Image (tube, rainbow, N blue to C red):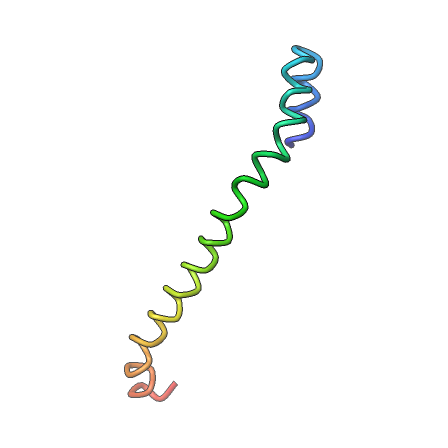
Length: 62
């Protein structure tokens, strides 16, 4: 889908399409640390939830 949108942009305004083609990898690299932090925070929250719910799971016998 992104490729088709880029092709339409290339036909309509080729300088903007080339600029987007150059800018996309730079933005992806700049946003990579935020994705890694998000994965780490999600893992910590899952661990905390598992620890909080552990006594209930043990009492249920599951």
